[in-house]
Image (tube, rainbow, N blue to C red):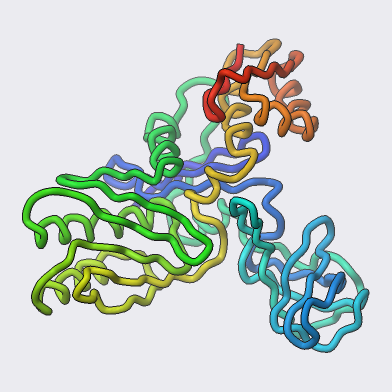
Length: 328
């Protein structure tokens, strides 16, 4: 049975699913990510964007996009369910998606929360191990840092080639480069693609650009490999003559690729590293953008100070890369 290592940290929960000694899934869930998929809320209609079509709902401190929009005046209450959590995109954050559901809508507030990361992994039937605290870093020991680096660059090597994974507003695109026989390269890449889809929790529309392949039987074989290895549920097109296939998986939350590129990720990782050291005072030194993000959220550094039993100071260093912060 696969084992899920779950670490509850300051501002976020991280998890790795381990099978046969290696990480097959990596997850990151922020405390400030807004309502989770499956959350039911009696929300207030803040703004009608298109009558009968779309509107903005206020769910406590968060907002969500409801579509379609039933009849409701601005300021009125509707009972809604979150069908997809909010997703951070460069220059255009995407609000949580909502749908109207039946039930009492007279009292504003959360009715029930969606399943958290830990609850989802438990429901998947994994053996659960809670990790964290001083001593051995279980996540890092199973490659957390390397997986984060792959998600940040989008570069995933496989025998004979390289996947380049690029999230875009329309779809996640996976490009394949390599050498050798095109059919062998494509079949090896198909195994790597399926593993990457699971490891980084890639969902929604995924476009994969394999090498151009001659012969229908070769393309059918490539589709069979994907069908056998992709995590369910999914749908896909046939592999066309140019080697392109589109995969569609239910979109419920941001992928790890989107999480690691969102504002604040580097700061949350810095808090994790700082919290693993011995108790006492800490100075967190990081890029000015990381320090500014932390300064705007003193509750996080206060939580670190309580955890360490000491004072936490922040220091900006423009020479540091965003991900190169350190604690002393």
